[in-house]
Length: 114
Length: 113
Image (cartoon, rainbow over all chains, first blue to last red):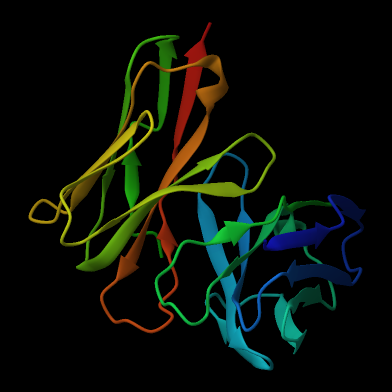
């Protein structure tokens, strides 16, 4: 069966510090991978998605970047965090070979910027 | 940008009652999906309905789709306290390939025991 891991679960960072959130998927190959941000009590904002190694699509221009160094690894980064980067970050995967399929989510990282 | 928009934003019912949530969207779709999110957790996929389907059932869940009105509804029958969560609709626009899902802002459902 397939599993998705996100870490850390919570993170408190000062303004201006760097960020690296990691997401890995097990039990599948060549998945589509996604990073979302969710503000408190709000819907999901798609940040980045990837259909293959090194292929990143950015949905919203901002202070963040994403990389996919391996097939089942997706990393969300920032060089200098802003207060507005606070939120709940969710990673998800879907079957790459079958378009428009359901997405499967990790348990998220709650990021607080001080 | 958000395409799906759920209504109501929040819903509070007694255990045993039915809960109905609605979703409206703007563009032609390939399919529409409903997800559930418990507080502080990731989303869990509930049900997918394709554009050529009108109704789908899964346990206590019933989803309808009206493509002429660009709307969908999620009905949870005989609700339980454990159904308390936020529910999101997500649409896949026509275009094929790996078109990302577009999520609505969700309905917060509270089921009171």
